[in-house]
Amino acid sequence: MLRLQAPLPDRYTRATPDELARWIEEARADLAGRVVILGHHYQRDEVIRWADARGDSFRLARFAADSDATDIVFCGVHFMAESADVLTGDHQRVILPDLNAGCSMADMADLEQVEEAWESLAAVVDIDRVVPITYMNSSAAIKAFVGRHGGAVCTSSNARAVLEWALDRGDRVLFFPDQHLGRNTGFDMGFTEDRMLLWDPRREQGGLTEDEIRAATLLLWRGWCSVHQRFTPEHVEAFREQYPGGEVIVHPECAHEVVALADRTGSTERILEWVAAAPAGSIFGVGTEIHMVQRLAAEHPDRTVVSLDPLVCPCSTMFRIDAPHLAWCLEQLVAGEPVNEIHVDPDTAAWARVALQRMLDIT
Ligand code: 13P
Ligand code: SF4
Image 1 (cartoon, rainbow, N blue to C red):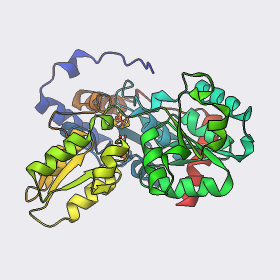
Image 2: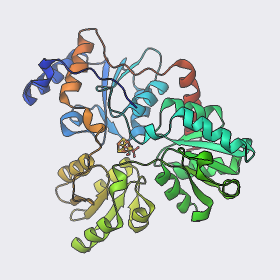
Image 3: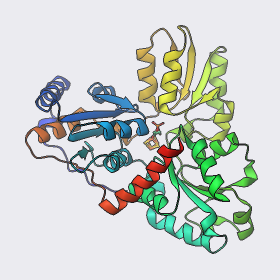
Image 4: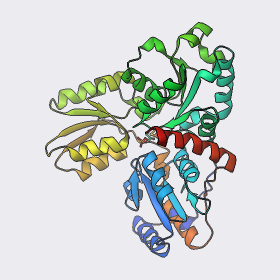
């Protein structure tokens, strides 16, 4: 999705790292008590060092909701800032330092496509028995669609509980946008491959026959994360060869053949907890975004933490948030001219909140 971020003034693009750090520090001091800076685990070091709270997307949204700050500077991607806006009060403002920090996976399910899929399904099965579930990594418009149609949001740490809830209420689930999280959770719940079919939004009726739709329990939207899809079984094998005593931990956005070989699978927050709780000398091959892996390695020098993929694999949209953008949006706040406010319209926000609240009630 194209969002237009105007180029930054020269003051920021030409500044040295030291100047930027000083400006951020000064602006933060000026805004003390009023602003909170949130940082997702995938952020660069030059950004995360300023975060008042770090976390996965869900934890950060909760942090925003519980915060008294009037200005929330969200160092993450667009859907995270939207969720924070949905969960915060009208007196609070959510700011995304670079408007082009989207999420390619979230963009793979747009409202029009989802509504078309819903209509196609309604022509084949009793639509009141289909429960839509969306991953946190989706736009507020998709979360609102889910809220309106009796479904819920899930995160990478509670997908199983949410899917179980959904299947208590209906016969089948339409799950978007990440096929891998859906499939990995489905396998975890004991479903075989023939019960989990891929819904391709670019094809008529998702590319499925009517019989296939009737037979499916999980209809998995054909979306994926370009960062996590890079990890392969060969990466796992190469790591095990190099580190025979090592443990493989991956994010559930990885393909099932990788998850099946891993020792553990969990959200960014869980991966972090596992490494932090491990004894000195432990060895981990981690399948997630490289900034988080490198930070884990730096923060736990007595453990060996390496990326499963020896070639660097950053999330290019998370990477857009940098010190110049952070300095710029903080200084604009100090000047009383806020920029890059993320505002979800009230109707969308109300229904997205319903879907988010259902998740909270389930888990
Ligand atoms: P977490 O919610 O596990 O932090 O995941 C967010 C994300 O974007 C993973 O790609
Ligand atoms: Fe989106 Fe993947 Fe980046 Fe996460 S790592 S924000 S899912 S593109």
